[in-house]
Image 1 (cartoon, rainbow, N blue to C red):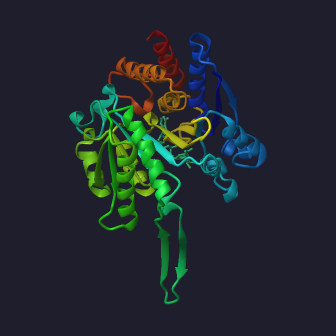
Image 2: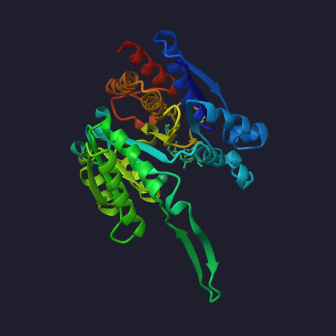
Image 3: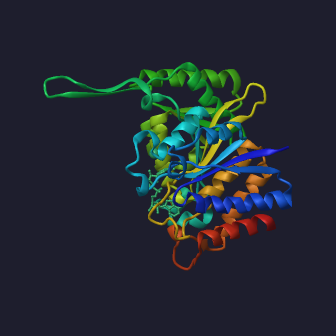
Length: 367
Ligand code: NAI
Ligand code: MG
């Protein structure tokens, strides 16, 4: 089968991290017959410099026809003053919108070798492996009305509106239940039905979806504020957490800090399955940005980008054995003491971006 990948390295450390994934793709094609066909495009500041847009129509077309998109990072001080519509982030927003990426997957995995350096107690985070599924295209970030009204008495009123329709809750909970089946088969849904009507509907529709199609999966409900507390107190009680756009934004950042550096965190954004082929549009990207402070120095941690590629193998190509093997390679390399600067600690071996990538590739081949 041909597997079409569009690579959008972007700006700053994006291309440096993407180069390490390219090494993996080359090895997987040459030695494992993976059959990846890659194309490269421009996004963010790089696209603006080339043709005055944050992503060109041609690259947008490529993204829509690829099986998966690998995205590096966009932005940097060089483009701080470009017009708003073509600012670097607009490239990512356009991709999300046109690919209809409504499900954002943020795993929080604590590699054994890094459990010591977490901000939490070792026993709380060691062996942690949870997945937050955040609704990405609805809720209070997009609902109308959305405005600031001048009340005329020296007062203004800022308004955002939380809106969720049944189909939006059905499709995001469907993703969570399906993913749970490939893991520990547990979903916890988080909302605030005690104070929000959209929360009442959320809870109801998740429960109905569960009853109709996924009753083999264990479902629990938790108020989102209590969920935040439980994530810090004892995160290992969770497997998959499904939640709305706003709560998911915050809860996934909380979960991120359970596991250490931004340089370690992957993500995936999925669209609806194609009714004919069943395949989903998908974009994979590290959680971190373009890190202008370290760009060009060859010291960025490529693991977030490599782990995003592992998610791509797992979710877009159902290459489960290869994804497991790549994640094991990352874990083993950390066990052996390889560290980029952001995760460096005493007694470990500090290496460059490229050396870290090489170590993961070599481990992947040897496993
Ligand atoms: P950032 O994630 O780029 O960097 C925050 C801090 O973490 C920096 O000190 C950086 O050096 C460090 N860091 C991040 N990734 C790292 C890695 N792989 N290895 C080692 N250290 C790493 O966030 P910041 O500084 O707020 O934003 C910088 C630029 O990136 C801005 O232009 C921002 O708009 C953009 N950005 C883009 C995102 C995207 O493309 N999805 C997401 C977040 C920010
Ligand atoms: Mg956030």
